[in-house]
Length: 354
Image 1 (tube, rainbow, N blue to C red):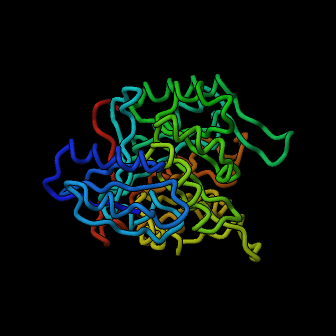
Image 2: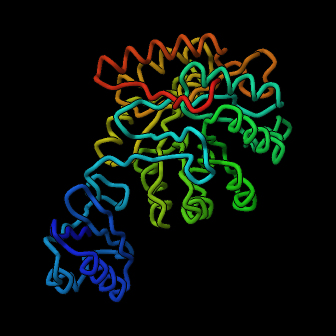
């Protein structure tokens, strides 16, 4: 259920409505808007019997029933697009945002391998126009014998790359045990496809308050993805970015099938920003750029792309990593695609020289 307040409702009236919702045994989620505040209600399993009591409170304009099974992430709940801002928590020199008018590009290696590798790639992607740096310190791998990441050392190298470039950092969180450590380094927490329905982890990152990049599971529907995001928002964290990264289908011509239809569909159903990962979808570097172009044309709010200075020697997913020159060429192409649909490409602030 959604309570829409009058445009001139006072802070005291909004607080009184939230208190009344709590007294009924539900959770209230106030959401200030450009013209008025809306208050979402969660915790009810059906229609609220005492809704009339709330409707009569001062400052309440109307009560709207939310029909989607996901409440807080739905477009019914919040009409305006959410913009997720990153970098403020850890004092990044050039904060970024995802979900505004500009298309944001995140780039970096699949996994942190060494200081030299991380710094070289970080400087290269920043110079090409990326506004955020990616890199895995903890890696969930299908085989227990594959490279699992450098762990705490990898986080330290990511922090050094952030200091050198000014770019905020996103890295994957695998479990609740390592969450406190990752929070001390990461500007954004990535919940990978394999953990999309790890509900204790979703609740934990929700309670952390740190922005979250939530990837769609490769056997998950869009509804599954939105309900997973609901776990995070239900813990009080509205800063969630959704990521389409390809799903498994009957076709074996690519690593996964990139579901570009999910981009406009999610933007119809939800106010959360959605980005696309063409690297994992294709599994091949020669297909990443065409998919990136298509994702921007479909309306994605951003891209997350794997870049490595020497893909042939990468410890993880080298076959799908772009080289820095190819990434720079891709940025020029997606900029032209974005301009055709009246969107700019986000650029890093000039606080630090690359």
